[in-house]
Length: 412
Ligand code: ZN
Image (tube, rainbow, N blue to C red; front, side):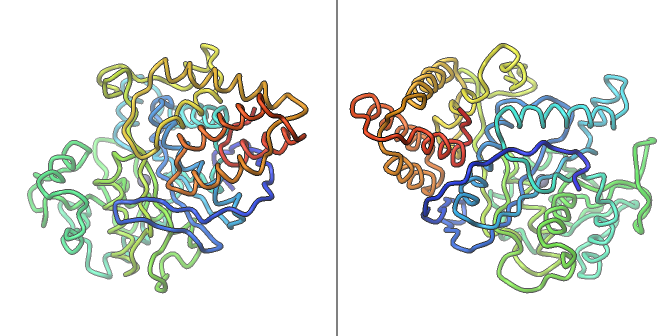
């Protein structure tokens, strides 16, 4: 049962044979032909509203989820909530609120935004605070395989044997590690990049009892255990077969290093098998030519747009006008383009005679299976609109409507 209940979203059935999904990753092209599909997506730290960067990320993995389901695969999809972390504690202290109330409140806002954007909820939406026992067991397991050491009761992960697989040059990794909460300069570390696994309690911060002392976990180990426990089940501490533990690890491109590298290394240190077959990352969203960031104060929030009367389907459509993997800009022109395209599609869907559905569905499948080529998919819809206006021949608007919902999450 999910601790944070999340309303279900209806997915219309699609009776159409789809080509296997191909995704381009830093490790090469991956084709998913198996009948099962396991996907872990890194969730939010609940201290701020859902901005368009979050929306673009969760939309990317929703498209993968939708495509695999429509292909008849058995999909297992898990997402976490980092409901204990420095930024959350800092924000709670700044605002004089209880960190648990802040987290609950922000998770509910996030779920509301996702529901508006028609994102299918994960089967398991797991708060980090619910897995302290599992983290304890995982650290014990990693200690037994020789990857753990202690500095003043804080436990560190020895990453040295994985550094040959660093996704970026070491010097770059070092500066990003420091920017994103790492402590490369701490005395006593075996390698400056070693991440913390367990932080001993200090300054009355929240903590949990464990066999490693009273404290709280580092960020990477949380995602490592949540993904393994909820995708592999009870065998998560003993899995020892296969080439990979899960099919896909996903998130924004800001998670490539250190987060995804470290959680993957920790899973491998525990079980001796590579973590994810594919690491898939969505690009960053900027605003009118500038990087969107909290420090610049130019974040565009989904809830703000919706409160201003913007159709959430137009936000979804606008985000699909460009490739998921690219860093891209959000502009008013993009939103206006999406709004007028949706008005045209809705008009055609309301007609009794339209262009045939199968040509369109086949083009949607072909584009989406090619590394989620959403710009090409949206062009196919434009062509279908044009054909429906010029040469309507069949009563298939309902079939098209269900396909747009099923494959692209456009509920019109
Ligand atoms: Zn994560």
